[in-house]
Amino acid sequence: MIMTEVDTKAFEGQKPGTSGLRKKVIVFQQPGYLENFVQAIFDSVPELKGGTLILGGDGRFYNDVAIQVILRIAAANGVSQTIVGQNGLFSTPAVSNLIRLHKAAGGIILSASHNPGGPKGDFGIKFNGDNGGPAPEAVTNAIFERTQHIDRYKIANGNDINLSDVGETHLEEMTVKIIDPVADYLTMMEELFDFDAIKNLLNEKRICFDAMHAVTGPYAKAIFCERLGLPEDSVINGAPKPDFGGGHPDPNPVYARELFDTMFSENAPFFGAASDGDGDRNIVLGPNIYISPSDSLAVLAANATDVPGYENGIPGVARSMPTSRAVDVVAKDLGIEHFETPTGWKFFGNLLQAGRIALCGEESAGASSDHIREKDGLWAILMWLNILASRHQSVENVISDHWLTYGRHYYSRHDYEGVDKAQADAVISGLSEKLESLVGMTFQDETVSKADNFSYHDPVDGSISHNQGLRVEFESGSRFVIRLSGTGTVGATLRLYLEKYEPKDGDLKQDVQTALQPIAEIAEEIAKIKSTVKREKPSLIT
Ligand code: VG1
Ligand code: CO
Image 1 (cartoon, helix red, strand yellow):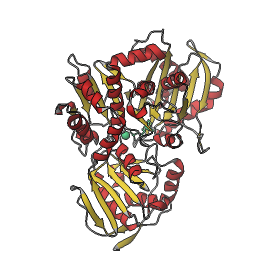
Image 2: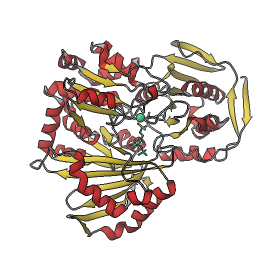
Image 3: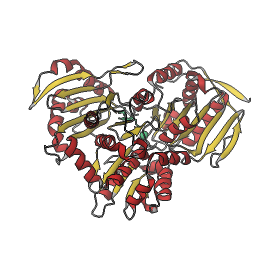
Image 4: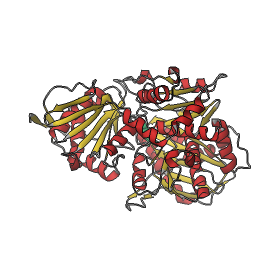
């Protein structure tokens, strides 16, 4: 094989965060930066040698360059076959599916997910293991460890591979298979959902799906327009662009403005939805109503048996710790297990592998099931459509019925983005120190019942993950949580999660921020975020 061993110097800070390594594009463009990290993956996961690798990304700026580099490093490290998405595109859920389908040793996803793209934006790289899920902490720690001492990487010579045509080619001894990124994903969706029922439901109804110029455009067109026969304008911003059209591919009320304007207009479609950069997040809307992701997870759990893929019931559910406890109430009612894990999809992997849970989700607009080992935006959207079809109801009716049955968890996240790292750390350490003393104290009319720094004890492999967020719970069932983001690339981002439970006979139709105002005030009184990071208000409220 024509291959070079290149001497390299370790870079600082190549520590994967909540979901892979995310940095500014210019950081990744430094000679050796990407190469070092990728070589560290190969050094830490020996199974890749002689195995199959799945490779693709969300199409953001640098996707095309990085893919060629990774193909060469893979060939030089003895990967026997790499399966790449046409034009270098794969959504995160599609990669998870393909790893499992091809019994691959792993997958590399090029994405910084909801972070903005373009030359001045962010780039990211995630490694998923042979179960299809994000590498667990033991593996990401090993990769990080390796990056700190790396002094050479192996890279095959040779020309760039043309990724625009489906087919098979070779790079030295490695087979490179270029496949349609959508086909296998669509097949999997066909196995889970009643497409005929969804087609009937949407007959003469309009939907609006916002692909945010990110990777789900081609997937959504194949599902909604080709398979379900909906008009082409059902998918907006459907062409993936390297800079996401200058937007921020994060499906929330602020960044998915076009969709929200459409859904909150007089002539709103029956159903609205959006996904993020790499296609693993989702939001769902009806005319004049937005479903909070925590509620969405609870609705999916409560109605899962309406959907063919889950008609025999689900063994259990899980949510990340900051996610509202709406799904716990459903689980108790169904008599199934429910788990609380740290933020980040990697923590659901063991529970899914062990068959303890079938559905899981996060407040950040991620939900999925045991069909793969990642969150899956279009899956969640099809779940909703299948449930609407079987219940013959609108989005608003489904959520109103849900609250009338289980009560409502008012919920919101307040983000303080790009704040000074030392000040953010001061908020965390300040609150950590007084957690114990808070128990029993009363603020306004809320008495603290529990306050701790969340540690997760994985019930499957016994591993323990500390420092996963500070939580303060009140006797009323309300609570707030504070943690530092692990996906940002500028300064630090503090997230404040607010939650208030209203029983089913209570006032279920309040404005969310108004309902949460007292908890927000108490959180400020206790944690002093605003005064410490010197901000008058959060930079983003979702
Ligand atoms: C955020 C979300 C978390 C999610 C992660 C990756 O992490 O809060 O729920 O799993 O992004 O999602 P953090 O550490 O910034 O809070 V994605 O769609 O950006 O891969
Ligand atoms: Co994502």
